[in-house]
Image 1 (tube, rainbow, N blue to C red):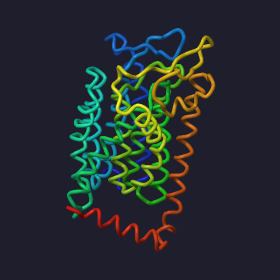
Image 2: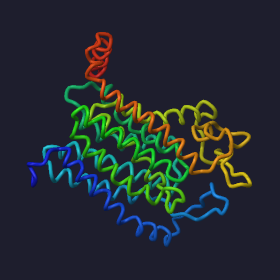
Image 3: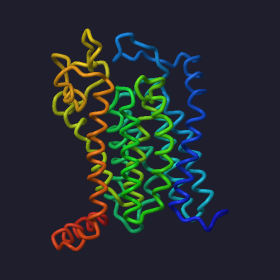
Image 4: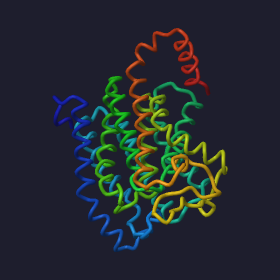
Length: 338
């Protein structure tokens, strides 16, 4: 099964990332054309001319990710089990995204379905952990997938933040010597980079919930399998801040209750006079172009990505701190509750 035993794990991860990139890059034009022919399209409301754009572009991300992951499984069968578990979870989350795109699931239904999709990840948990820890895994996956689904709506914002998150996680995992999970992060990174070419301003395709949900789900899978939960939490901070602003200002909203960001006569984004708060709307203190708003959000993502990398760099030294060691001992006790 191991056809290239001389290759180190980081080399396998690079190969997986390249394969996922080229598969997604080659498939996206055909996927866009097929989605347009099937009338799976939507209006880009953040442009004055309201172009019609293909939706559910997450198909292309999933295709590339699957090829990258299968390549990693084939080249290193010792990691086959956790990689297959992650692959199953992401495919299940992708299926839920398809349902959500087509049927507009309620928040409760989506949370429950994502919880179920996260259950296979339990089989990749460390041995001898307690029931409480096991239950937190699918809960975290459901929350993480929803977080990357909420900070959305502008050309390239979701896929761009996904690229930033996966890049940061890959670098952090390399620093910590967790090369096995870089196969996961590189497979998703390659697919997202290829997709971003078509999703950036002016977008030719939107990811849909099919694409946005799997980004957060992948981050959570990396967090638990690689045991880099703190770093994953840091790189998700833009999404967490956005969700906190929305919940604080409007609670749990249905889509029909959401008022989109508006355009002024110059075609620039402006905040509505009333409505919920969000990270995007915080950037609109004055009217700005859509692509500039996206760049600001990307910059916020880069800042937190760098913080995550710095935490990975200083983590070995931090472990010598007695206060932190006491905290980690308490955390280890949590693993065995239940």
